[in-house]
Length: 133
Image 1 (cartoon, one colour):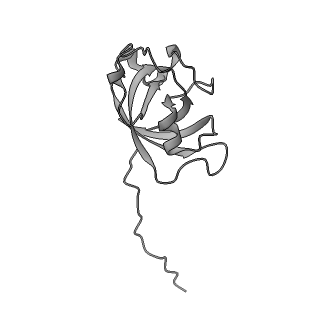
Image 2: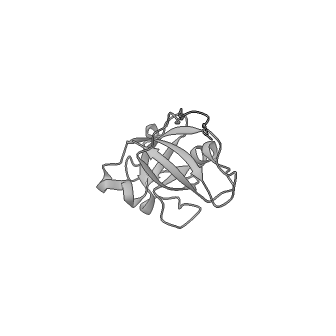
């Protein structure tokens, strides 16, 4: 007896991540930052920005870099906002930021309150992310 599958067509998401990491969130005050000091112009009007963890800080070269980020999982099921991807700008170094992350675990990036809430339930403290520069 021959078994036939439903076909070999597989759909892949448009988002093809280069890296996987973790993200936490932090609250204001966001200034001064390690990248741009007290310059309010450093923050995108969307408020989608982040501090770089040591893994992507790159001795300050991360300042101004932009990343596409999406939540892929968390300790609590259904934490991630499905199919939501954001573009964030690195404005600070997580290790030295004025405002500390909600979670003190080392993370790849620490997202602004707005950025975190856009891709995940804001009651979470850390999430697993895919990101691409």
